[in-house]
Image (cartoon, rainbow, N blue to C red):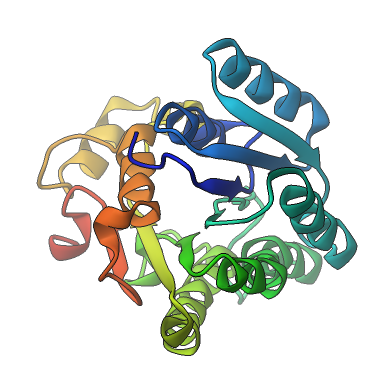
Length: 254
């Protein structure tokens, strides 16, 4: 019960790591406010968490729209009285994202809107509620590609995640005196259906694995467990950090 008594809002909770985070946070005692653009995905998450005995509410909406984001926090506080944790997990990584030398401006803007503006909006409306609660934790999801160059360009994604790191550090300085911590997680390659599809060729898979000292791709729970630590009081003296969860790829990249 590492989050007992806490209220946590998780974006992108209708699928993937966001849905897993909702389950883990609820299991650890948090009241979870799950948000996602997919109402269907949210229903599935809410049903799983509720069936396991967790306390959860689902709110759909678009993380890039200020009206939707503000509504999430208004409804969360109205329903549960406070907010203690903001987990900015929502993000996109479209196949069309490539080098800025060949970029589609609409794709670039969409990635920046979701991955960076979405985080900024959630902090805009969520941070004041954390301050009102007497302090709390902001956990932002970035990426290991924000720390190093990649041979396969994904420049909108890379730029957006690099900006999330800078924003996180700025928030840590601004909000620290008010009892609010802000940290970012930089996941490495995570074993997902998409990654398995991309690496169907065994030789390509082995080339990727050879760059990871721990010898395996990450699992969703590797990232969620890092977020759990940063959300909990166990990390009460941790702020402004870049928490790299990548199996060592960023120190062995070539």
